Length: 182
Image (tube, rainbow, N blue to C red):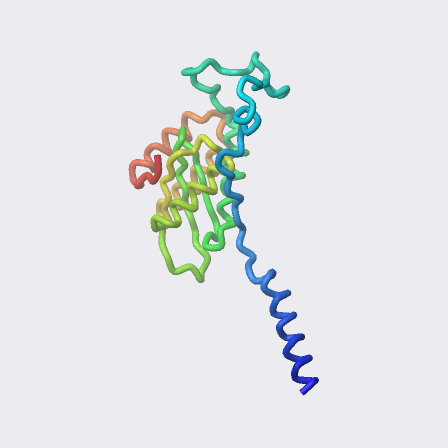
């Protein structure tokens, strides 16, 4: 009786300890609504500017932000691809940005039987927005010829000297896709 009780207790303790290791899914932190500017809400009229604010670099309202350099675009696209490859469904990802839209070509893990459904598109958009908040729409495909086209665009981006040629080719591919979001 004593051995059985001890075995049962040890089994329960082991099960409890292992449940913390059950999932290796990458999770995104959800923002807390209303957490920003709490001091301003509590004490009106005491708002202060952040010491990090540089008025010389601030844009007047209604003006466009400066155009991204090709090197910035390369870094952003690489970070987006890495963020998408952390999804359990995705094996390889290829991304090209075109304004506030991202063209995404996905190659899925062999175990994944779903397709590019609404749920996946929503996950992709959320992932890309963790890298670049300006992305409002995504055009996601797993169609092999289109994925190959997007992959070829990423290769062109790596050696391109300007974004115009890449953007023109991206617009041609975008015409073949359905845009989600926005």
